[in-house]
Amino acid sequence: MIKLDPRNARKHDKRNQRAIRESLELGAGRSILVDADNVIIGGNGVFAEAEKLGIPVRVVDSDGSELIAVRRTDLKTDDAKRKALAIADNRTGDLSHFDDSAVVDLLKEAGDFAGKAGFSAAEITRMAENVDRKLGNDSPEVEFAQELLECHNYVVLVFDNEVDWLQAQTLLKLKTIRSHGKLKQNGIGRVVRGPAAIAMIRESAR
Image (tube, rainbow, N blue to C red; front, side):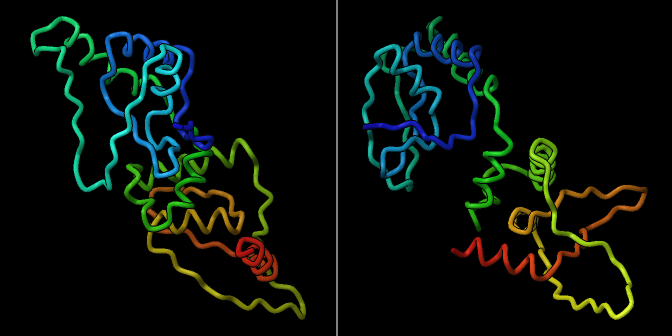
């Protein structure tokens, strides 16, 4: 049985749902994608509207090594319905949008594959900033300081890509900081209290 993805990062408002439904009224165009557990990877909105219209689903098994094409045998290149479907099938994607928080969480969990998700480093940073603004962030960061009898010992962690840095920001509850000024800044240094960092790392490892 096909199941909707409860963590789907793509959001479909009423207008988008209507556009998908009207596209499906021209007949199904694209396929949807499900995993081995029958949870939808891509096409949650299409599946939801297809269910309402009573359109049956046929599963074609694949290990991802070939591209599967769906041939609409009832449509010729010059058919009016075919021309409407060519626009409608693509338009439905334009009308949906991503949930920043869901994308950020999924990219963290995607690990080494996060860079293949189609988002640039700047887009990931923007989404993380949006999440920070909406949720707020109780950061354990400290400012540089000098006090009598106080010592500061450091471990420096270097991240050479935005995806790993995004994971560190989330794990260590770092607020998002943007570079300002005329000079281009390639990287940002942060200071976090050691005991707090260790506690958070231990918590995440459980």
